[in-house]
Length: 378
Ligand SMILES: Nc1ncnc2c1ncn2[C@@H]1O[C@H](COP(=O)(O)OP(=O)(O)OP(=O)(O)O)[C@@H](O)[C@H]1O
Ligand SMILES: [Mg+2]
Image: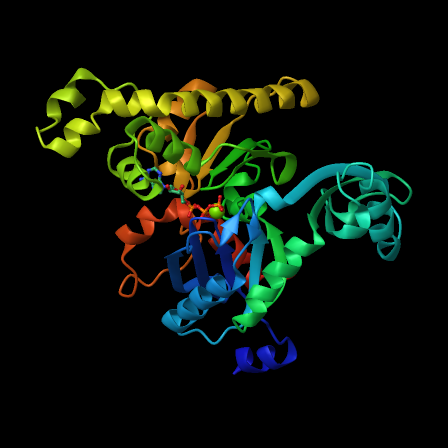
Protein backbone atom coordinates (compact mmCIF):
# COMPACT_ATOMS: atom_id res chain seq x y z
CA UNK A 1 0.00 0.00 0.00
CA UNK A 2 2.67 2.44 1.03
CA UNK A 3 4.61 1.77 -2.12
CA UNK A 4 1.54 2.29 -4.21
CA UNK A 5 0.87 5.77 -2.82
CA UNK A 6 4.55 6.52 -2.83
CA UNK A 7 4.48 5.70 -6.51
CA UNK A 8 1.63 8.11 -7.10
CA UNK A 9 3.38 10.91 -5.31
CA UNK A 10 6.71 10.34 -7.00
CA UNK A 11 5.91 9.02 -10.42
CA UNK A 12 8.93 7.21 -11.69
CA UNK A 13 9.87 6.96 -15.27
CA UNK A 14 12.08 3.98 -15.85
CA UNK A 15 14.08 3.86 -19.04
CA UNK A 16 15.70 0.99 -20.93
CA UNK A 17 19.43 0.92 -21.56
CA UNK A 18 20.28 0.68 -25.26
CA UNK A 19 23.71 0.54 -26.86
CA UNK A 20 23.84 0.72 -30.61
CA UNK A 21 27.29 -0.71 -31.19
CA UNK A 22 28.90 -1.08 -34.57
CA UNK A 23 28.96 -4.89 -34.09
CA UNK A 24 26.04 -5.52 -31.71
CA UNK A 25 22.90 -3.79 -30.55
CA UNK A 26 22.23 -4.44 -26.88
CA UNK A 27 19.15 -3.65 -24.85
CA UNK A 28 18.64 -4.08 -21.09
CA UNK A 29 15.60 -3.60 -18.90
CA UNK A 30 16.15 -3.05 -15.19
CA UNK A 31 13.56 -2.13 -12.63
CA UNK A 32 13.32 -0.87 -9.05
CA UNK A 33 15.83 -0.22 -6.29
CA UNK A 34 17.98 -2.16 -5.83
CA UNK A 35 17.75 -2.75 -9.56
CA UNK A 36 16.67 -6.14 -10.79
CA UNK A 37 17.24 -7.55 -14.24
CA UNK A 38 13.97 -7.85 -16.15
CA UNK A 39 15.12 -8.60 -19.66
CA UNK A 40 17.88 -8.28 -22.17
CA UNK A 41 18.54 -8.73 -25.85
CA UNK A 42 21.56 -8.69 -28.13
CA UNK A 43 21.50 -8.76 -31.93
CA UNK A 44 24.22 -8.28 -34.51
CA UNK A 45 24.17 -4.81 -36.03
CA UNK A 46 23.25 -5.19 -39.70
CA UNK A 47 26.38 -4.62 -41.79
CA UNK A 48 26.86 -1.05 -42.95
CA UNK A 49 24.42 0.49 -40.47
CA UNK A 50 27.11 2.20 -38.40
CA UNK A 51 30.29 3.63 -39.83
CA UNK A 52 32.83 5.73 -38.01
CA UNK A 53 30.33 6.30 -35.23
CA UNK A 54 27.51 7.56 -37.46
CA UNK A 55 24.27 5.89 -38.42
CA UNK A 56 24.30 5.34 -42.14
CA UNK A 57 21.13 3.31 -42.52
CA UNK A 58 18.56 4.33 -39.91
CA UNK A 59 15.83 2.17 -41.47
CA UNK A 60 17.64 -1.14 -40.94
CA UNK A 61 18.44 -0.07 -37.38
CA UNK A 62 14.83 0.76 -36.62
CA UNK A 63 13.72 -2.70 -37.77
CA UNK A 64 16.16 -4.51 -35.50
CA UNK A 65 15.23 -2.36 -32.50
CA UNK A 66 11.55 -3.09 -33.05
CA UNK A 67 12.30 -6.83 -33.13
CA UNK A 68 14.27 -6.55 -29.91
CA UNK A 69 11.45 -4.69 -28.16
CA UNK A 70 9.01 -7.39 -29.23
CA UNK A 71 11.39 -10.13 -28.06
CA UNK A 72 11.77 -8.44 -24.67
CA UNK A 73 8.03 -7.86 -24.29
CA UNK A 74 8.70 -4.62 -22.52
CA UNK A 75 6.26 -1.77 -22.36
CA UNK A 76 8.93 0.75 -21.54
CA UNK A 77 9.51 3.27 -24.28
CA UNK A 78 11.98 5.65 -22.71
CA UNK A 79 15.64 4.86 -23.32
CA UNK A 80 19.04 5.92 -22.12
CA UNK A 81 21.47 5.46 -24.96
CA UNK A 82 24.98 6.55 -25.90
CA UNK A 83 26.74 8.10 -28.84
CA UNK A 84 29.72 6.34 -30.39
CA UNK A 85 33.11 7.18 -28.89
CA UNK A 86 34.10 8.30 -32.36
CA UNK A 87 31.33 10.90 -32.40
CA UNK A 88 31.88 12.35 -28.93
CA UNK A 89 34.57 14.61 -27.59
CA UNK A 90 35.00 14.98 -23.85
CA UNK A 91 37.20 17.52 -22.13
CA UNK A 92 37.67 18.59 -18.56
CA UNK A 93 37.74 22.34 -18.20
CA UNK A 94 37.38 24.99 -15.54
CA UNK A 95 34.72 27.64 -15.15
CA UNK A 96 34.07 29.92 -12.20
CA UNK A 97 31.16 28.71 -10.12
CA UNK A 98 28.01 30.70 -10.86
CA UNK A 99 24.27 30.21 -10.61
CA UNK A 100 23.30 27.00 -12.42
CA UNK A 101 21.23 28.89 -14.98
CA UNK A 102 24.31 30.73 -16.23
CA UNK A 103 26.63 27.73 -16.09
CA UNK A 104 25.60 26.29 -19.41
CA UNK A 105 26.44 29.44 -21.30
CA UNK A 106 29.77 29.82 -19.52
CA UNK A 107 30.66 26.19 -20.30
CA UNK A 108 29.71 26.68 -23.95
CA UNK A 109 31.84 29.76 -24.16
CA UNK A 110 34.82 28.04 -22.58
CA UNK A 111 34.31 24.84 -24.58
CA UNK A 112 34.54 26.70 -27.86
CA UNK A 113 38.31 26.75 -27.48
CA UNK A 114 38.52 22.97 -27.13
CA UNK A 115 35.98 21.63 -29.59
CA UNK A 116 37.37 21.26 -33.09
CA UNK A 117 34.13 22.03 -34.93
CA UNK A 118 31.88 25.09 -34.94
CA UNK A 119 30.23 25.41 -31.55
CA UNK A 120 26.81 26.20 -33.03
CA UNK A 121 26.86 22.80 -34.76
CA UNK A 122 27.35 20.77 -31.59
CA UNK A 123 25.14 19.39 -28.89
CA UNK A 124 26.87 19.91 -25.60
CA UNK A 125 26.35 18.69 -22.08
CA UNK A 126 28.41 19.01 -18.93
CA UNK A 127 28.71 17.65 -15.42
CA UNK A 128 30.67 19.12 -12.50
CA UNK A 129 33.38 16.76 -11.25
CA UNK A 130 32.71 17.75 -7.64
CA UNK A 131 29.38 18.33 -5.96
CA UNK A 132 28.13 21.78 -7.00
CA UNK A 133 27.26 22.69 -3.39
CA UNK A 134 30.77 21.85 -2.18
CA UNK A 135 32.40 24.66 -4.22
CA UNK A 136 32.40 28.21 -2.77
CA UNK A 137 30.83 30.89 -5.02
CA UNK A 138 33.28 32.44 -7.46
CA UNK A 139 35.85 29.62 -7.14
CA UNK A 140 36.91 27.69 -10.22
CA UNK A 141 35.14 24.40 -10.71
CA UNK A 142 36.17 21.45 -12.85
CA UNK A 143 33.50 20.30 -15.26
CA UNK A 144 33.61 17.52 -17.79
CA UNK A 145 32.07 18.55 -21.08
CA UNK A 146 30.77 16.13 -23.69
CA UNK A 147 30.13 17.39 -27.20
CA UNK A 148 28.79 15.71 -30.32
CA UNK A 149 27.83 17.01 -33.71
CA UNK A 150 24.18 17.95 -33.95
CA UNK A 151 23.64 15.85 -37.08
CA UNK A 152 25.05 12.72 -35.39
CA UNK A 153 22.72 13.10 -32.44
CA UNK A 154 19.78 13.97 -34.69
CA UNK A 155 20.16 10.79 -36.77
CA UNK A 156 20.36 8.69 -33.60
CA UNK A 157 17.24 10.30 -32.13
CA UNK A 158 15.43 9.92 -35.44
CA UNK A 159 16.17 6.18 -35.69
CA UNK A 160 14.99 5.65 -32.10
CA UNK A 161 11.80 7.64 -32.57
CA UNK A 162 11.00 5.67 -35.69
CA UNK A 163 11.18 2.52 -33.54
CA UNK A 164 8.73 4.09 -31.07
CA UNK A 165 11.37 4.97 -28.47
CA UNK A 166 11.88 8.22 -26.64
CA UNK A 167 15.51 8.97 -25.72
CA UNK A 168 15.86 10.54 -22.25
CA UNK A 169 19.63 10.72 -22.07
CA UNK A 170 22.46 10.32 -24.56
CA UNK A 171 25.41 9.26 -22.47
CA UNK A 172 29.12 8.73 -23.07
CA UNK A 173 29.86 4.98 -23.32
CA UNK A 174 32.80 4.64 -20.92
CA UNK A 175 30.99 6.76 -18.30
CA UNK A 176 28.09 4.31 -18.51
CA UNK A 177 30.54 1.43 -18.08
CA UNK A 178 32.01 3.06 -14.98
CA UNK A 179 28.57 3.14 -13.39
CA UNK A 180 28.53 -0.67 -13.25
CA UNK A 181 31.61 -0.64 -11.02
CA UNK A 182 29.58 1.05 -8.29
CA UNK A 183 31.10 0.56 -4.88
CA UNK A 184 34.37 -0.73 -6.30
CA UNK A 185 35.31 2.83 -7.29
CA UNK A 186 34.65 4.17 -3.84
CA UNK A 187 37.04 4.62 -0.98
CA UNK A 188 37.98 1.95 1.45
CA UNK A 189 40.79 3.52 3.46
CA UNK A 190 41.77 5.88 0.64
CA UNK A 191 40.39 6.71 -2.77
CA UNK A 192 41.71 4.07 -5.16
CA UNK A 193 42.91 4.97 -8.64
CA UNK A 194 40.93 2.85 -11.05
CA UNK A 195 41.50 2.15 -14.71
CA UNK A 196 38.56 1.21 -16.90
CA UNK A 197 39.23 0.01 -20.41
CA UNK A 198 36.48 -0.76 -22.88
CA UNK A 199 37.50 -2.48 -26.10
CA UNK A 200 34.59 -2.29 -28.51
CA UNK A 201 34.31 -3.29 -32.13
CA UNK A 202 34.91 0.13 -33.63
CA UNK A 203 36.73 2.00 -30.88
CA UNK A 204 38.02 1.65 -27.35
CA UNK A 205 38.03 3.96 -24.36
CA UNK A 206 40.44 4.36 -21.49
CA UNK A 207 39.24 6.00 -18.30
CA UNK A 208 41.02 6.72 -15.03
CA UNK A 209 39.30 7.76 -11.84
CA UNK A 210 40.34 8.59 -8.33
CA UNK A 211 37.49 7.39 -6.16
CA UNK A 212 34.48 8.44 -8.19
CA UNK A 213 36.19 11.48 -9.66
CA UNK A 214 37.12 11.38 -13.33
CA UNK A 215 40.82 11.93 -14.06
CA UNK A 216 41.17 10.98 -17.69
CA UNK A 217 39.01 9.84 -20.60
CA UNK A 218 40.62 8.94 -23.90
CA UNK A 219 39.37 7.33 -27.05
CA UNK A 220 41.79 4.67 -28.27
CA UNK A 221 41.57 4.10 -31.95
CA UNK A 222 42.29 0.37 -31.79
CA UNK A 223 39.58 -2.17 -31.23
CA UNK A 224 38.06 -5.50 -32.24
CA UNK A 225 37.86 -4.62 -35.90
CA UNK A 226 41.63 -4.09 -36.10
CA UNK A 227 42.27 -7.64 -34.88
CA UNK A 228 39.78 -8.91 -37.44
CA UNK A 229 41.41 -6.87 -40.21
CA UNK A 230 44.85 -8.26 -39.32
CA UNK A 231 43.54 -11.83 -39.48
CA UNK A 232 41.69 -11.14 -42.69
CA UNK A 233 44.90 -9.89 -44.29
CA UNK A 234 47.21 -12.61 -42.97
CA UNK A 235 44.95 -15.49 -43.95
CA UNK A 236 43.34 -13.88 -46.94
CA UNK A 237 39.79 -14.13 -45.57
CA UNK A 238 36.71 -11.96 -45.89
CA UNK A 239 35.61 -10.07 -42.78
CA UNK A 240 32.99 -12.63 -41.73
CA UNK A 241 35.41 -15.56 -41.94
CA UNK A 242 38.12 -13.54 -40.19
CA UNK A 243 35.71 -12.74 -37.32
CA UNK A 244 35.02 -16.45 -36.91
CA UNK A 245 38.69 -17.35 -36.99
CA UNK A 246 39.43 -14.66 -34.40
CA UNK A 247 36.75 -15.88 -32.00
CA UNK A 248 37.69 -19.54 -32.39
CA UNK A 249 41.46 -19.42 -32.70
CA UNK A 250 42.60 -15.90 -31.81
CA UNK A 251 45.09 -15.48 -28.98
CA UNK A 252 47.12 -12.68 -27.46
CA UNK A 253 50.12 -14.47 -26.01
CA UNK A 254 53.04 -16.33 -27.51
CA UNK A 255 51.80 -19.88 -27.78
CA UNK A 256 53.63 -22.41 -25.66
CA UNK A 257 54.80 -25.63 -27.22
CA UNK A 258 52.21 -27.48 -25.20
CA UNK A 259 49.51 -25.54 -26.92
CA UNK A 260 50.89 -26.59 -30.27
CA UNK A 261 51.01 -30.20 -29.18
CA UNK A 262 47.44 -30.08 -27.93
CA UNK A 263 46.18 -29.39 -31.39
CA UNK A 264 44.64 -32.28 -33.15
CA UNK A 265 45.33 -32.48 -36.81
CA UNK A 266 42.16 -31.11 -38.22
CA UNK A 267 42.76 -28.84 -41.18
CA UNK A 268 41.08 -25.73 -39.73
CA UNK A 269 43.19 -25.96 -36.62
CA UNK A 270 46.31 -26.52 -38.58
CA UNK A 271 45.58 -23.52 -40.76
CA UNK A 272 44.92 -21.24 -37.77
CA UNK A 273 47.57 -22.75 -35.56
CA UNK A 274 48.53 -20.56 -32.57
CA UNK A 275 51.92 -19.52 -33.90
CA UNK A 276 50.50 -18.21 -37.18
CA UNK A 277 47.57 -16.61 -35.40
CA UNK A 278 49.87 -14.87 -32.97
CA UNK A 279 52.05 -13.59 -35.81
CA UNK A 280 48.98 -12.13 -37.51
CA UNK A 281 47.67 -10.42 -34.39
CA UNK A 282 50.94 -9.25 -32.86
CA UNK A 283 51.26 -5.90 -34.67
CA UNK A 284 47.81 -4.84 -33.41
CA UNK A 285 48.70 -5.96 -29.88
CA UNK A 286 51.89 -3.92 -29.98
CA UNK A 287 50.01 -0.85 -31.18
CA UNK A 288 47.36 -1.28 -28.51
CA UNK A 289 49.78 -1.71 -25.63
CA UNK A 290 51.92 1.19 -26.90
CA UNK A 291 48.88 3.44 -27.11
CA UNK A 292 47.76 2.48 -23.60
CA UNK A 293 51.24 2.99 -22.17
CA UNK A 294 51.46 6.39 -23.82
CA UNK A 295 48.11 7.47 -22.37
CA UNK A 296 49.13 6.34 -18.90
CA UNK A 297 52.42 8.18 -19.28
CA UNK A 298 50.55 11.35 -20.24
CA UNK A 299 48.44 10.93 -17.16
CA UNK A 300 51.49 10.47 -14.94
CA UNK A 301 53.03 13.66 -16.25
CA UNK A 302 49.78 15.56 -15.67
CA UNK A 303 48.80 14.22 -12.31
CA UNK A 304 52.12 13.23 -10.78
CA UNK A 305 53.54 9.80 -10.32
CA UNK A 306 50.60 7.80 -9.11
CA UNK A 307 50.10 4.09 -9.24
CA UNK A 308 46.92 2.60 -10.60
CA UNK A 309 45.40 0.41 -7.90
CA UNK A 310 42.92 -1.63 -9.87
CA UNK A 311 41.67 -2.07 -13.40
CA UNK A 312 38.56 -3.35 -15.12
CA UNK A 313 38.26 -4.36 -18.73
CA UNK A 314 35.06 -4.59 -20.78
CA UNK A 315 33.77 -4.64 -24.35
CA UNK A 316 33.56 -7.68 -26.64
CA UNK A 317 37.02 -6.93 -28.01
CA UNK A 318 38.50 -7.84 -24.62
CA UNK A 319 37.38 -11.44 -25.12
CA UNK A 320 40.36 -12.21 -27.34
CA UNK A 321 41.96 -15.17 -25.58
CA UNK A 322 44.70 -14.15 -23.06
CA UNK A 323 44.30 -10.44 -23.81
CA UNK A 324 43.39 -9.40 -20.27
CA UNK A 325 46.37 -11.15 -18.62
CA UNK A 326 48.67 -9.83 -21.37
CA UNK A 327 47.55 -6.23 -20.75
CA UNK A 328 47.81 -6.75 -17.03
CA UNK A 329 51.42 -7.92 -17.44
CA UNK A 330 52.55 -5.27 -19.88
CA UNK A 331 50.91 -2.38 -18.02
CA UNK A 332 51.81 -3.70 -14.59
CA UNK A 333 48.26 -3.15 -13.36
CA UNK A 334 46.01 -5.84 -11.90
CA UNK A 335 43.16 -6.15 -14.40
CA UNK A 336 39.96 -8.12 -14.24
CA UNK A 337 36.98 -8.42 -16.53
CA UNK A 338 34.21 -6.10 -15.35
CA UNK A 339 31.07 -7.83 -14.10
CA UNK A 340 28.01 -5.68 -14.82
CA UNK A 341 25.63 -8.28 -13.33
CA UNK A 342 27.22 -7.99 -9.92
CA UNK A 343 25.04 -5.20 -8.50
CA UNK A 344 21.78 -6.55 -9.92
CA UNK A 345 19.12 -8.83 -8.52
CA UNK A 346 18.87 -11.71 -10.94
CA UNK A 347 16.20 -14.39 -10.91
CA UNK A 348 18.16 -17.61 -11.47
CA UNK A 349 15.08 -19.44 -12.67
CA UNK A 350 14.73 -16.99 -15.57
CA UNK A 351 18.33 -16.28 -16.57
CA UNK A 352 21.16 -18.64 -17.35
CA UNK A 353 24.03 -17.30 -15.26
CA UNK A 354 26.66 -18.91 -17.49
CA UNK A 355 25.17 -17.18 -20.52
CA UNK A 356 25.19 -13.85 -18.69
CA UNK A 357 28.77 -14.33 -17.55
CA UNK A 358 29.87 -14.98 -21.12
CA UNK A 359 28.29 -11.70 -22.24
CA UNK A 360 29.55 -9.57 -19.35
CA UNK A 361 32.01 -7.65 -21.58
CA UNK A 362 29.41 -6.78 -24.23
CA UNK A 363 26.81 -5.82 -21.60
CA UNK A 364 28.92 -3.60 -19.36
CA UNK A 365 28.03 -0.39 -21.22
CA UNK A 366 24.35 -1.29 -21.81
CA UNK A 367 23.84 -2.22 -18.14
CA UNK A 368 25.47 1.08 -17.17
CA UNK A 369 23.02 2.89 -19.43
CA UNK A 370 20.11 0.97 -17.92
CA UNK A 371 21.34 1.85 -14.41
CA UNK A 372 20.98 5.48 -15.32
CA UNK A 373 17.54 4.62 -16.65
CA UNK A 374 16.34 3.55 -13.21
CA UNK A 375 18.08 6.51 -11.53
CA UNK A 376 17.40 9.33 -13.96
CA UNK A 377 18.65 11.97 -11.53
CA UNK A 378 22.13 10.49 -11.15
N1 LIG B 1 35.92 -14.44 -28.36
C1 LIG B 1 36.26 -13.28 -28.92
N2 LIG B 1 37.56 -13.05 -29.24
C2 LIG B 1 37.92 -11.89 -29.81
N3 LIG B 1 37.08 -10.89 -30.10
C3 LIG B 1 35.76 -11.07 -29.80
C4 LIG B 1 35.30 -12.27 -29.19
N4 LIG B 1 33.96 -12.13 -29.00
C5 LIG B 1 33.62 -10.92 -29.47
N5 LIG B 1 34.69 -10.27 -29.95
C6 LIG B 1 34.72 -8.93 -30.59
O1 LIG B 1 33.98 -8.02 -29.80
C7 LIG B 1 33.45 -6.98 -30.64
C8 LIG B 1 31.99 -6.80 -30.34
O2 LIG B 1 31.87 -6.38 -29.01
P1 LIG B 1 30.83 -5.28 -28.57
O3 LIG B 1 29.44 -5.79 -28.74
O4 LIG B 1 31.21 -4.84 -27.19
O5 LIG B 1 31.11 -4.13 -29.65
P2 LIG B 1 30.16 -2.91 -30.05
O6 LIG B 1 29.53 -2.36 -28.82
O7 LIG B 1 29.23 -3.32 -31.13
O8 LIG B 1 31.24 -1.90 -30.65
P3 LIG B 1 31.42 -0.31 -30.50
O9 LIG B 1 30.89 0.09 -29.16
O10 LIG B 1 32.89 -0.08 -30.67
O11 LIG B 1 30.63 0.29 -31.64
C9 LIG B 1 33.70 -7.42 -32.06
O12 LIG B 1 34.83 -6.72 -32.59
C10 LIG B 1 34.02 -8.91 -31.92
O13 LIG B 1 34.88 -9.38 -32.92
MG1 LIG C 1 30.26 -0.90 -27.56
